[in-house]
Image (cartoon, rainbow, N blue to C red; front, side):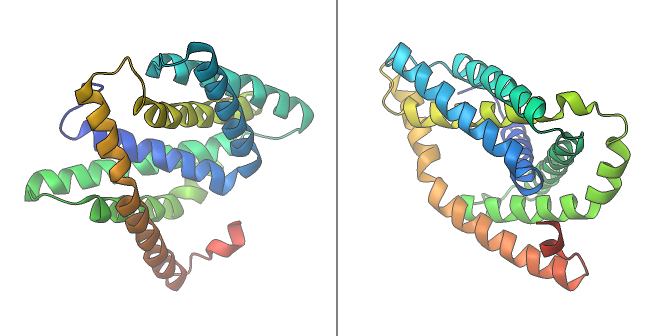
Amino acid sequence: MLGLTGWQPLIIAAAAAAMTTSAFYSAMPVALVGSMAGVLASIGYLIATGQEVELLMIVGIAGVTGLIAGSFYSWIVTGGSRPLAETLTGLIAGLLAGGSLALVLSVTAEPVGMFVLAAGVVALVGTFFQVSERWLVSRSIPWLPGVISAPVVAGLIAAVVGASIWILGGTTAAMLDTRSQDAITHVLNDVPPGLLGGMLGGALTGIVLELFGFHLEDQI
């Protein structure tokens, strides 16, 4: 629907998912602020516009609301640049995971279901994130401004929430044509196998990482 073809959707989706997950994993209070701002802004947008659901508009409004909410959070709760550093580390891990899977799929040229695809994305993202987290975060914290950390993270999470609500609202939006509605319905049908694949992929990756000495429970 956005004109993305080939390897582009996989890399963008993996990067967005990894960024969102790392924010909740490492900076949950800020991520929750962004999520709440995204939900409230998106619902307000839907109430104000009715059936007219535009992706860029709902994402933009949710993102700006998240920035404002994150600014209030950073004003009330003094924090450093770690939330942004962790989120950017997740973004890099997602780009690496999506790129790796896209390369493998282009070489094999075999069709892969959403269950296997989600399991592979989660496994690779978790591995890349844990292996690179300490090195990347420790080196990026000094040069990332702490004052923009919470607002940027909250804005990114709110934008992702707005896009998710657009997908849900798009199934009933009168302005979308039949092909677009069918595409969104297809995405929603892929959620259950993707959720199961991601859960199993994450569980197995967590076990392997623990066996190799990455104590995940120490970071929660």
